[in-house]
Length: 77
Image 1 (cartoon, one colour):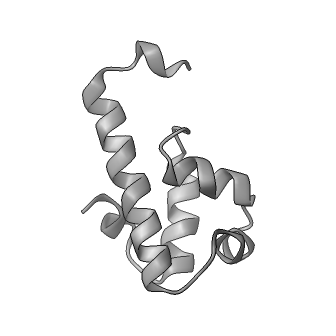
Image 2 (tube, one colour):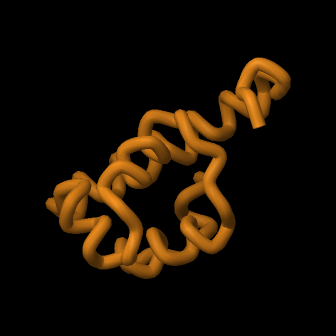
Image 3 (tube, rainbow, N blue to C red):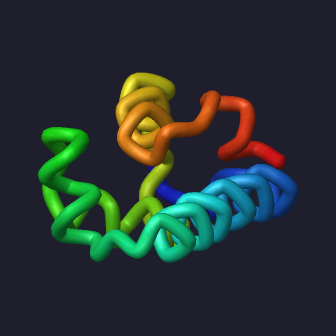
């Protein structure tokens, strides 16, 4: 789905989640590569999520939350 057709508020939420993933990853002293290994996702996918270039699935967010040792809701706060 092209991002041009999405409302700005949706893209803002995507950016907030990506920022939160990055902050939690850095707090845990993990590289994108390490988080990718822990989740089974590619480093490129982690990169795209953090930069809000990718509308990720709830499944990916659940994997990320578990790898970071947080509840999934922490990715949205």
